[in-house]
Amino acid sequence: MSLSPFPESYWLSSVDIPEFPALENTIETDIAVIGGGITGITTAYLLAKEGRKVTLATAGRLIGGTTGYTTAKVTAQHDLIYDEYLAHFGEEKARLYYRANQEAVEFIARLVEREGIDCDFVREDAYVYGTSDSSVDKIRKEYEAYERLGIPGAVVTELPIPVPVRAAIGMRNQARFHPVPYLVHLIKEFVRMGGVVYEHTTVKTVEESEPIRANVRDGVSILCRDLVSAAHFPVFESGLFFARLHAGSSYVLAARVPGELPAGMYISADSPTRSVRTVEYGGERLLLVGGESHKTGESACTIRHYEALEQWAREVFGAVEFPYRWSSNDFITTDNLPYIGRINEKKPHSYVATGYRKWGMTTGTVAALLLTDLLMGRANPYEELYSPSRLKLDPDVKTLVKQNADVAGHFIGGKLEWLSRKTEELKPDEGALVRIDGKKTGAYRDPEGELHLVDATCTHMGCEVKWNNADRTWDCPCHGSRFDYRGEVIEGPAAKPLAKVKE
Ligand code: FES
Image (cartoon, rainbow, N blue to C red; front, top):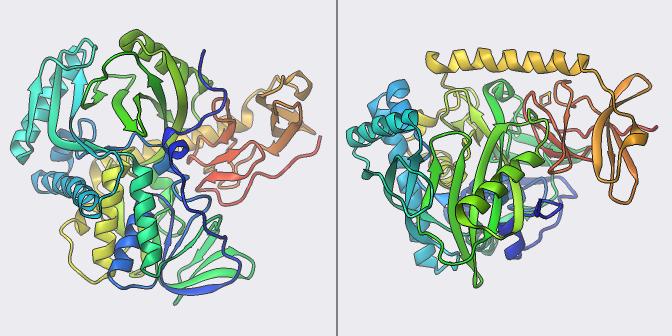
């Protein structure tokens, strides 16, 4: 394989992001926005424009979470979803979903133009393509849904990409961009308007009192009237989100391809998923190839997913070099519709946005616009659609039961798993589960030969983590928490690191 040994996001490597200090003392603010991705940054920016006193806090670096590991398609075409939404939610809600997301596309377009943001924003059509009988049938049904909902689209049988397309459904007037310069602009504007930013500030617990207390560590909290969780996983303990979300992983390669690259954005309807778009920034032109989705923590060898994408990019596009590779982790709700809004009516100051199902650029913007309206006391046409307290019988409950049965299976299976590896067998840059003093332990020998040992029991609810050999992380198959090889939390719901173990 000719991929770089360590993952690196093209987006994060190509633009500098301003740095901010960590929170050292308890502060008071009107609104606290927790999470430094597109949702948190756009929400903080919009609320500051409304004259509100806002503090934005993020666990690591700004744009260092899912937003920095996206394919950055700005589109209301989220796979083949409209036929499913028509069946599950009805015509009015399916239409509202399209409108909300198309408005998000137009919001970004207007902002880029008005503020002159240099972020490679290009209007392009988006396509879902099928290469099998079953996907052609699904595309036909999706087109019927487009017609019923008034979505401008068309079915075509040829595309400018060299895949054996049987049929494809296009959505016109969508867009792609580079999310980092766009968001850096919003961050600078937020600060210019008086907004306060803290990086490396992890909210560990939230007391939903008055004021709300977001606790960072002993003696350091953010006190606020309203709290918006725009983090990867909700920071609230209420809402039972761990039982209503499951985590998915997917992979992206940036490839150098000789000759002309096609315009347009593409994603396959068949499995394994293949997603394609180009990037042009700073004089470089690359092809982004993504896909290979699976439930987080359920892949026995994550590097194979990159290898599959590499082989596909070489065979289909003649790709010759792969300067960047990265993976992304997203949460998906039980009914495939994001949770955005007040957690429930009894908690009028607790707001959440999560479960974007991998379509974060538009959904994060929808969330920012919706949450801003709610926080400003304005009506918003999408409040009921995205309400986090909804629970619809079909398909929510069935999926909820299945997911929690899966979790129980992982919990028990992880405890019983037979371990044959020993620490002395581990080569440099190799990780595995081992037993030390009878206890299941995560072991990773770094490239310099130093051994790092952590307790393999996830600090969220006690499942056993799995080694991710592509990213050198410990991933939990139960609710998607991820830890680095030293045990530090990368993504929740876990808030505490894996305990260190001595040999
Ligand atoms: Fe819930 Fe690990 S993420 S037990």
